[in-house]
Image (cartoon, rainbow, N blue to C red; front, side):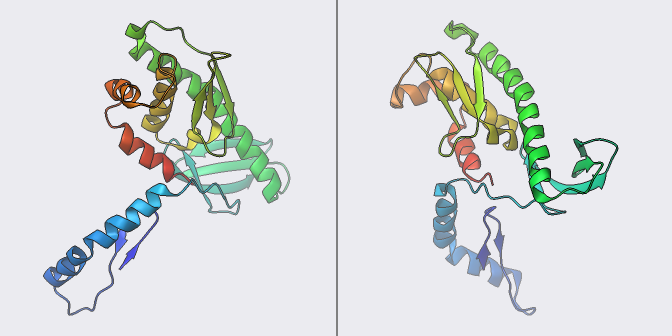
Amino acid sequence: MTVRPDKSVVVRAPLHASLGDIRDFVSRRAAWIAKVWREFDSRPPNLSQSYGSGATFLFQGRGYALTVVRGAAESVVLRGDSLVVAAPDELDALNIRRLIDTWYRDQALSIFREREIECHRRMEAEGFPLPPIVIRLMKSRWGSYSYRTGRITLNLNLIKALPACLDYVIIHELCHVKLRHHGPDFWRFVARYVPNHAGLRKQLNRIG
C-alpha cells in the first residue's frame, strides 16, 4: 500500500485476493494512512518546477501540460489541457521560465484584484475601505496585511491555487483590518465568511 502526495491510496494485491480482504487490509491501516496524510498537510509548499515538455503547471487549481511550439511572437496561452508557450526561436528552460513567470504575474494582477473586490463586497457590512494589493513571491506566507501602509500583500503562487483558496487568503487578510491577532475571535470572524477555512488551508499546503 502506498500513500501518494495527493493523498490518494494505491493498494497492490494478488489477483486471487477478494475485495473484502482488500478492504479489511486498508481498514486495519487506517490510522497509519491518517498519520501520513497529516505529514503531507504539515509540509511546506514544494516550489520546485520542471520546464521540460509535458511538465505540469498549476493555474487556479488545475494542472496543464507544458507544450512548447514555434510561433511568430512570444506568447503563453491555455489551450484545452495544455499550457502552450510559443516563440520564434528555440527556447531553453530559462526562457520558458521567464515567459511563464511573466504570464503568471499578468494573470495574478487581473485575477487577484477582481477577487479582492468581490471578497470586499461580501464583507461590506464591516465598513472598512478596499485596501490596495501588492503581489510578490513569498517563501513562508500566503498573504499579509500591513497596519502601517494599509496594504495587502499576496503571494504570487496563489495564482496556482483553487479560486476558493485565493478568496480565503484575501478574506483572511481583510479580517486583519479589524483584528490584529490570530486568537479565537479572529478565527470566528474568518469563519463568518469562510466556514471551511481549515480545509482550504490544507489544500494550500499541497500546492507545488
